Length: 147
Image (tube, rainbow, N blue to C red; front, side):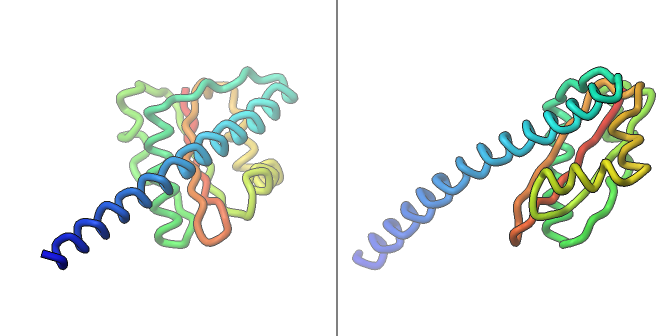
């Protein structure tokens, strides 16, 4: 009986700890996503482009991709992005991925890369989704654009 009660107490504690750790992570992810959108949209405005609108559906796609990169500890692009975005009926799409010690440093690296900068400034892009994962002291970021 004591063993069952101990197991139950341990299980309840484990669930409580998991719940308490999950809330800050999701708040952290929302803040990180908001910061990146602010950086990119400000950059777009500086270059005469309209602001991108956030797509929560595409945020989820980007989040899963960032989680996969963090788990595998390597940067890579999404496969079959056109298929994954099919429900949004896009005519064009693009993706930036990056990893660094801060969101700002990832964004700044994108501004110095021709291909990443072209994605951030492409006129046809209207919406985007962002995924951010913090792992081992760095953030893994995916930003998916479409229009």
